[in-house]
Length: 148
Image (tube, rainbow, N blue to C red; front, side, top):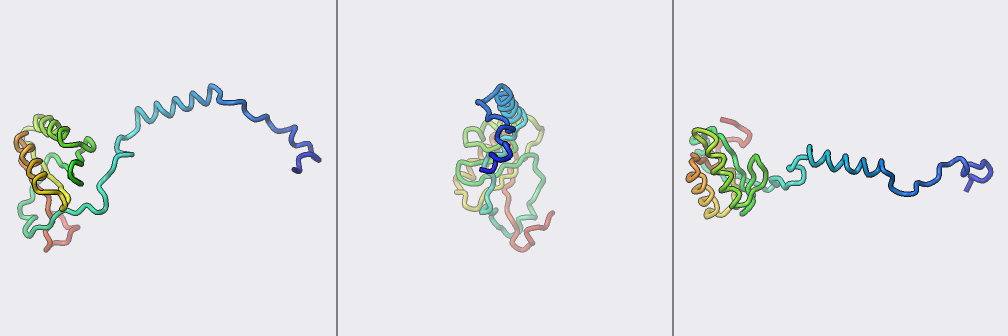
């Protein structure tokens, strides 16, 4: 090493002995920061690129604005504004949300691969909670980027 002729090694700081108090304060601050200000959606799974809404001729003619939206990505995985829910949690969420507004309406965005039995169970639970239900579909005659 080239430190011997210039005696550079004597000018260097010694290696730290271990973790000092400042290290643990920084770790605690990071944990506190992510606990208080972290988003539960950062590590949650999102809708994949293979999510396709079914197509139906005349789908836009029955379109209406809704107060709530859920997305059913695959059987047993349902996304709301509150995050991912399973079937028992969805029932409670529908009852809770149905009581917060006068005329609640629900848009169900279900992947085309969702079994009809699961879709009808969701619609039935939503209607029992007082929701008017709309099921999302695309009109094959219209470009997919167009709006109402």
